[in-house]
Length: 334
Image (cartoon, rainbow, N blue to C red; front, top):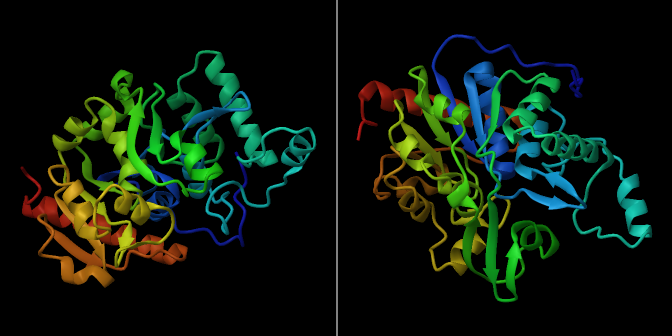
């Protein structure tokens, strides 16, 4: 088991009984709320993670959102960046640069070991779901972390400088090109895994939480997997989403920029409309409380900005309670 760094203060062990929660997540914002949910739920949490960001780099299978989720929940993430491992070393990248290799995508030495092991297991015929679960167990995590599909789905963006793979756009170009459209290559050939299908259909499921991830880059690839949206819509529990925008601005990442370039108003109301038909409730930030009642879906306001672990847990409590209220009131039944 990987040791958990920190000051030695461990959160209380969550109760093993009670309803389960399934979260859809991608990126740093999604991982933050997933951590809050994990602190409260433990093994009763399942996180379905975006793999549209996955790509092959230097011959290695890289799964950025999966790894950010693993590192965040295992207290291994770099707290300053929100991705990668804390206390990382960079000898590999230094030498790679000296050799003239591409250095635009940073791979720390510890992080590199995970990519090498993932690549080795996938080449031997393992599913990405199984590889991820093996790492989860090594990290001592009790929740389930499920890639959105075992088949590759690549988020590709059309920009004013031409088509770009997601990591080229996001990391190499720093989201500077103007975005014209987004597509999810390979989604038509992807399949919902048995593990995800079983988690959604679980009669003990108390709610589904769409984390405050980028709706177009992190959540849409998950929903693009054939059958995924239909399963979520028929789940035996309410589906809620948390807005990634606060007063029209993203806390981190290019959500607002992308919305503007796609011709959408950068507003929590736009995102609620984007999810309409899927969600039964929407959580906006307190700064957008005036939008509640105008969203076209049920909504509540809460503090959604998560600076520290206490705020992540507080938002997770709001999300869980909201699911429970909708379930008790039967307001989620379509």
